[in-house]
Length: 117
Length: 208
Image (cartoon, rainbow over all chains, first blue to last red; front, side):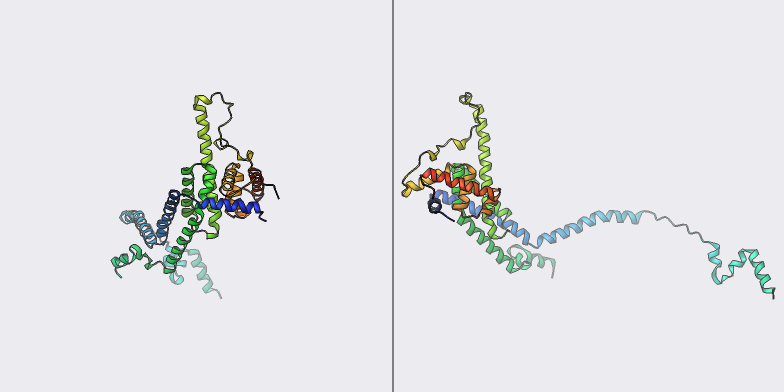
């Protein structure tokens, strides 16, 4: 609740604030315009499509600069030829015939099995 | 579309080619709202700073800094928040300026030969003005009343003065005043109550 005293002091002080001299008013006006001018560049940067485009292009160029030398080095360096060892069992495994060539005992057992009644 | 055509369409003020027209108009509206707010508040802000600092140029600097910071940092906030934020910044500027003066006053007191015999108490420039509370005016009429109230407010301790100006003159509620002063709601009530008591005593009014 506002008392009459509070109301009176508020009116007096507000009236006092309105009674500024011209020079002070002018300086306050200039200060306000200076502050408002600061709104512009920040807004323009946030709105402009150049910022994301420039950022994307810059990132692409940076990535190319970083990746290109390593890619070139990789293509120029001699590639070691892998030594491939082939197991004889793999070669003879087709058709299942190679198993008997390797193991004479198994071959003999198979022969006995064929002659048995 | 060739690259040059694309760049031309993006150039200068026609950057709105990609930005929406609604966004640009909203921005203009926000700028207009900020200008209205600053124009409405600047005189009382100057009065606030002047009562706190008692120096015209310092008060103008404080108001300008507060305006700048509000525009730079808080323009995106809802406009309802601008008033307590602006006065929070202003109160901080005034306090910083006072502290600088106090430090400068201590150095001056130390370096000035005439102050060598002083009692060693730190020089507080805020206490150098006469206390109008000792001269109650029984009848307040016109300009005399205005002057006596202004002097009485000027003589208040800083926190009481801030609470009184923000609550009574600026019309902030308790929560907004607490935000502006950086203290609790209870502290605001205490400072405001004491300020009213001191002012009543200063202008010679009996409490209701």
